[in-house]
Length: 390
Length: 180
Image 1: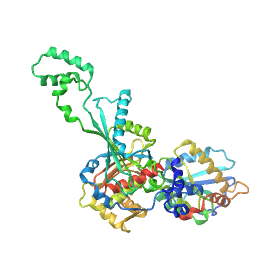
Image 2: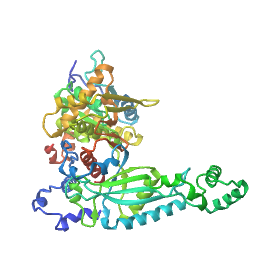
Image 3: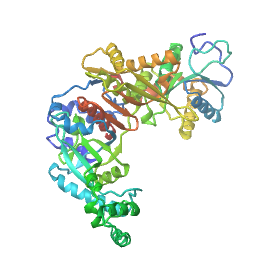
Image 4: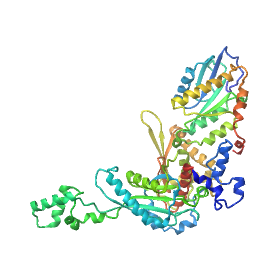
């Protein structure tokens, strides 16, 4: 990992002289602790409650509206080598060629309609926590018009002779019914209206972002762009193809980001602590009980105002969340459940947390519901992604 | 008797007794079986308990080593361990208590941070061992280790005592644990 040696050599990374002596960056602290053979504490005991930051106001709510209410699968991504924001059109072209090549190889065979995807790269302005964070960018896969098959031409010509109908539009629909959606000719595509409506529909979306990624930004050199969080929505095979292209082109590595129960309880506490004007969803927890022969699922739904009231009674330090408060909040829920049902929820595994702000599943799936706290949610996820990379 | 004391009974001849305390019955049973398979010069006795205090009605031999098994997947086992620790006499902690953390292999299932268990072991000045008790190979290795530690705690190894072993194990930990 050559990038880790960079801070000692490049003068730009070490701006403050006391960093050398105290080892203030988390990576340097960790290297020191490894040399001393002692244990390292990866998570800080305190975290900030997500607030509406000033940068949030620059983001147009309509532009990010397509990011909300969608199920995203999370991946962590190592820094991209020699990525530049000015070459986005070039990258679109290369990725399109790669996808076409992959589809022709027949490796990503999908049963059903064979759509061609056209990929567009664009930057997402304003999706950053601090000014130092690199710009987020978005990759969208749009549907192209269906491909023209040469064998279909011959077939339709024969049918034209046979049927001999005078009305071309009805003929087109009849033939489409018999030969299947893939087979079209030039004659048909002019009159067939439904395919033009489908063109441009977004089939796959993926976006890369970095929110408050200071600990990672300090350790990498100039050639690398740090965008540790990758969110994907769409077919798994497309994610795999696009991921392979990125790994080949920028020498980076994707790995799926799983969220463990400990981090889920932190998310539950932080999102309950957010001030909301009105609640759109109930606060819901899902636990999985490991028992044979099949596992049980326990779902606990709380009215969001009650959850907020419970949090307010537990919360002591303004603006910050501590480990003790999170533990106390969860213990209150566990003891309440135990009193009524005599089941120890602390012996089970927390699998899913869903609040009005966002919902997260342990497999690394997330859905953000509130645009006000979008940056806050992403900041925590970026922290988890950076932790996984390191 | 609500509090376990190390020296309130006479030792049995060539007998070493270990007490495993934990909420996961299946894992404790498997560990006990692995330990009994080990060939050892002294006679081994393995007692299993869900929590302390132990019922006083049973006639049991002197306990030489207590192992608290904490499952990192469930907070309940940690709470159970903390409550059981109150029923152990202070003189037991001179090398005759050990903590075993299981389940660290599957990071996505962990609901307790590893650091919490490290702090617990440090507070009670006792060694902390990590083992994924669900994996056969690791369990056999851990059983071997525990049998050796048990023999030392029962005094069957000449020249080494439980307190000796404790100070040997502690010196490998760095001074930065004081930062906790």
